[in-house]
Length: 482
Image (cartoon, rainbow, N blue to C red; front, top):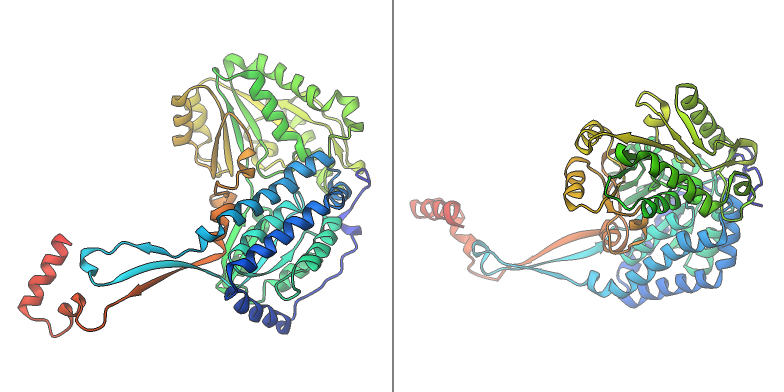
């Protein structure tokens, strides 16, 4: 089934708008859910974990139908990521929900203050097609842990996973706490007219701007998980075989369709030729030679023909403009297939260096000086991550200081996404806000400040009108010393 062509024009899309009356039911449920004890939130998280573990074959089948994902890849990158989030949230939820005391400065003596985390209310999650299970259920876990009612809008380009999510939600949650709205972009547009308290969007930067504008009309807070051209920097002191293996694995899993996949590789010119040879060897070691890859059960497919045709044209434009094909290049858009491809000789004027590739094409280019390479790339958009391969802390600190990003990985690629203790997200063009673990809990929570004042005389009363000379002197002391 993973070879089956799935065109966005041919998808069976059924719009299921949410009426204002239905939305108010969710609003009422959100008010009730926020007052429930922590045991209720833990119960739903445990029920979700149990459903996933019992339905792993069904999850694998849906992801294979949509993206041709191998079963092992589905387990490790989608199911495990979600299960890790559930277990992390469940073990730490009492700590996250606890009131946080705040110290009292001398100027506020007599008061007691603390902060608490309250649910935002009703949240909308709009998901992508590249990891259609992980990137829908992951934010759902954070929203539930924070005490919100939630509506999911999965991507219409992953219909099998959308149907799976609908079945899962119906089996695990009350219908007025969590629901799934399948359909095309018109469903998203209609949902974005409703007064949600928070909107969490994962997808392209172009659509992210539309969602951000719509959320602004609602006065809703928003989280945008977008993308960007994540660079890899390989310094001369790197372990070349280790670096090449990690880059190949991170770039070509899910057929390169990952926001955290390496977009291009910058390699110290002194090691460029040997590293390029090792990189090609690692592609063969992990996926087989060019003929084997097309039949390999360990290599997925592109989401639909239009995306395959875009990548085909992107590669041909680069080659026509002077880029050199070093590996792969086999492309069959009608079968949603493109082999792992490595090219060199790209220029900043080429489309392939200006757009996020989001597919199995890897440009590799040499640099003469790390400082110069970082200076030349400093004006580019801020990516989700920068991947640095070096043994030198000095090199790492230079990369950290000169190349901004949502995350920086030292001697690996993309694995930070699966670390539930790390905040995940981008900056500017690569995103807004943070997800995962405690950061995800905070994203779906309102931090409420509470201050208790004593009854009767307080220090603040010294500064009530009328303003005498004594009060003026006290004010001067306050400004100077407190």
